Image 1 (cartoon, helix red, strand yellow):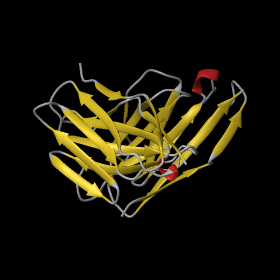
Image 2: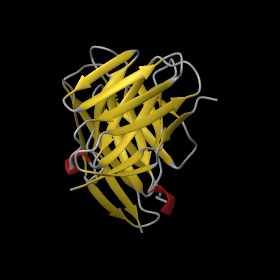
Image 3: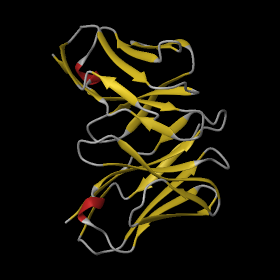
Length: 113
Length: 108
């Protein structure tokens, strides 16, 4: 079965600083990968998804970007963080047996100060 | 518009009670997920349904395609069941649409 690793688990960054969150997946190949954000007291929001290396689709306009340099690596970045970027960031992938199953990573809690 | 609604938003119950959380969606779907999010934030997929009923331990999930409605039931609830339960649906493509979640608190 799939295992998703995310790091760091928690992060406190000042406004205007850069961001890099990494997600790696084990136990599957050529997965669809997703970045979600959950703001405090809000539901999950899809930020980016990728169906293959170098293929990124953005769901909402923002100052974040995503990259997929390898099949099982998904990176979320920002050049300059905003206060509104604070939240809980989850990486997810679809299952190997069926594209409808979705697995989530442990998440990164980002606080922008 | 593809929408997902959950009810109730918050639910507090005594240990041992039978729990029901509801999810309704606006149009036909290809799959529905029930997710559990613990206080630390980690999310676990409990069930994926496209029809009928699934059971895992004390958890039961049902879906009525005609009514566009799903329920998550917990029998003999326990304090460790306290979490946020999230319904998510796939409206025929790869992306999930999430409900806002139900915060369940089970009191010993």
